Image 1 (cartoon, helix red, strand yellow):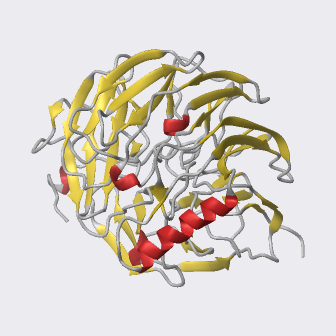
Image 2 (cartoon, rainbow, N blue to C red):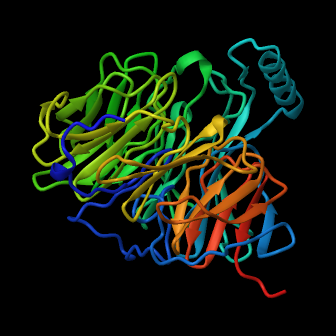
Length: 459
């Protein structure tokens, strides 16, 4: 770990994660229905954008026979997280229209992986790109819409899918982003309001797409980092028309969702990337600051609180940076705006949880879990995860607990605090790649094949 300045000059910080799905609200405009931590989860990292639901009380323990209110099948494949607004739970998915061909493509990719060759990518077959609204009470489908049907123009990684971005809503419209296969806005009752095609994204080694859109006032922000001409664009969230578009020359494929952060002088759109992480003015797309240091294949979405943004990446290198936004201008390398850096066991796939004065993160296939002090960057603990061998889903926080979900269906509930303590180990029969949602007393888990509602249930 490297500290950029002395501990005495550091300020407290926290996290506001917005990736593969994100949404933020400007102070200028409020939705018709007030967003509350207890009742809504309008973006993949929750009402605070940090992964924490501060007034939720989900169960400590569950299994296939305990505290499962419902388990319903979900067609297709997706790493998109569930979101909720009022009486509707929204899911995105991609459903193959030629199961035999798709199965053959998956098997071929698995053979490549097993042989040690690279990359193990699933070649495209015809898909239906679907958004559906379900009842949060019993999981039944309230409405389902096929946004698009067609053959994707490129492949995806073996463990991924053609629908990785999560939906986001402002309480008036719900936005379904399928990347190269279009961006769609629906009313909460399922009526198509507008659609936009931003072209074809060419991802690194055909690994597929994953960045979710973010809402900032009147704008829907979409990051388009790929192996072609990268850019970031703001669409009018009511019409889909381009409000501004800013080129990102030299940037390669990334999967992080933009983070929206109000500051003292302007609202910023923050995008981490392999070349430079950057902050943009949300009104016109003008670059405010930039900072190098992230690794290749930047995936984790930044988190934010109290004027400090935390950036992280962990492929072919390790890096976490704490950046103070107040006064940050131009190239921040070597400036006091970089409060601290940390370079051990940082996350590759999953984003960071900020809870209390701690940051929690997992180094996915290494089964390593860490927590550091958000103010100083000091390591509090790093440990192996018992019973979990790989992690894609981002950790969640509620009721003094950290919830961590393994790809094999095993989940750990960890006590919040400076020491690692497992409170419960829970196992489901479905794999878990998408980040779940915590709403009130309920935990909604999107497995590979099923949607679960986990809640205290009488024996």
